[in-house]
Length: 154
Image (cartoon, one colour):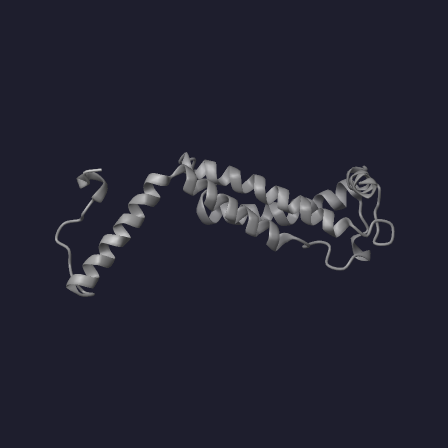
């Protein structure tokens, strides 16, 4: 517990100029920062897409998120901490894949939670197409588009 307090103080100390010998936990702490950024940005992206906010959607939102996850901690280390990044091995991009994966997972979860009716309709249409293909053959053409949600008794 004492080490965590010391690490937090080193990670938030303005212009502390950490190096690999004085602060060996910096890559791990940067990874946690990237995970936090990925989590928060994924939640934000999921809510924005479900509200039809057209500012950052789809691929553009993912690319912007990747840039935020990758470069915001680098700016923090270079300008706020003035870290000696050349003394560390692979510090600049430590935790980027983890942060990106968490961002995508969070985005998918929140978007799906907020759009259950779309997910249900997509799954229902997929089941109908599979049943039609199994009974009538792979190349069968359906004359009318079936909307199960409107015709269902439930």
